[in-house]
Image (cartoon, rainbow, N blue to C red; front, side, top):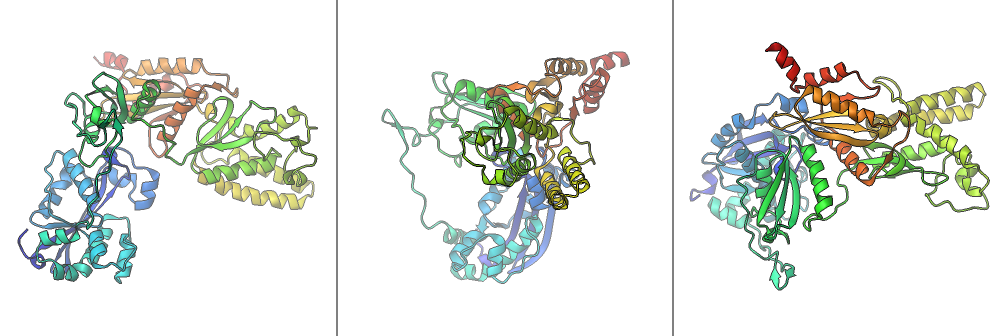
Length: 569
């Protein structure tokens, strides 16, 4: 670190990840550019295999697909090459704290020693040496320095852009710092954060207390749920992870947030599962049962919504909500966007003359604007038979509760609009036919944007399999009647066949709307949203499959078959 800054070699690094936080964050691509004497020299890049499937959003953002990482080498094979490149050089990155953390985590996960090189951050350089650039995101910062950016969100392209930004500011850095140590001191935050006073409990500060990590040696490196407890054995916090040991330890790392409960932790219990989804269900159940103070109830963080209809009022309405409805209701989803779901609701209301107002029906002396245009049956006037309104509603809901369209076929809603368009043309109502044609075109775009779940949840019974991250067994999940009918480890093909028969044996008659409890809708949403963007072995259970079909599906997935093993023996 005593060598002159102008004579040092620098390795400019950029990383792309799976977009997840904490222990779930995994590298998908690394790019590096060697810089010396203010010029760019060698380039190096590699894709990295991941344990968990990539989400669709991160694939669209980076252009790195699941197929690309499936064919990529494991981190254990590529990180030693990066370590060799870093030897004796200074690491440079844009927002370097993120790249250092991700790389150090990847090295630890691969069982390798992190080189821990000296680091410079181009964001800090811009803040100190290019203060007129108020926007410090990499493309905007590069543009302010006259550097053209053609590709972004790919590791090598971003590393090259970062390297050019570094070279543009390198002369100013050398003018103010002679060594790497002086450069780090120059770029350090000018006003260090001051510790805030924490809340107190009986005169004892909890946030200010020194956190002592409990023993986690007994926790496995496997999916599951962990429970932090205090000295009296009371639960303080419940969490889940695909690696119990690493996640439990991370709560007590110096960089982790200081919480009220962490200073009181004495022990940690755990429940091991075979999949992240099973851990998620156990976590939700334990939070509901134990009510630990560290688990504040939060709103859903994802974007998924449901189009639902509750039958507890005389003139039911369609509505969009973040959760399925409990009780006697039809729930369509999960749908990809709230804006799209709301537009679909408005289209259905106009096509079938349903209510556009809220659940509370106020009497009106005259029709609403929708009623005057013929797009609402106007039950608010008080002269409409509820059965007549219900027939319209049932016709609309039947498009989502009858057999769904097969691959390559149009959705029943589009076929309904096509039939109405032909009927209007036959009756020489050409203006209505043209209006319906525009609706048909827009609905086609809308249904494509909303995703694949355009049917009521209770008409799509299915069997899902989620594998252990290490390949050691399966968890099975049976979704029947819009609820999670059964779930748990699966070690025997014929046990899976029997459980499938039991789950379907308790189902309502097909087409009948089931009654869901509050717990049913919570678990149904957890499972349905978790599987979005993941490729899992899935078997549709309507019509009810024969035993041999279920057995063949499970065998193909890799579930053990003791009977077949006995025959071979």
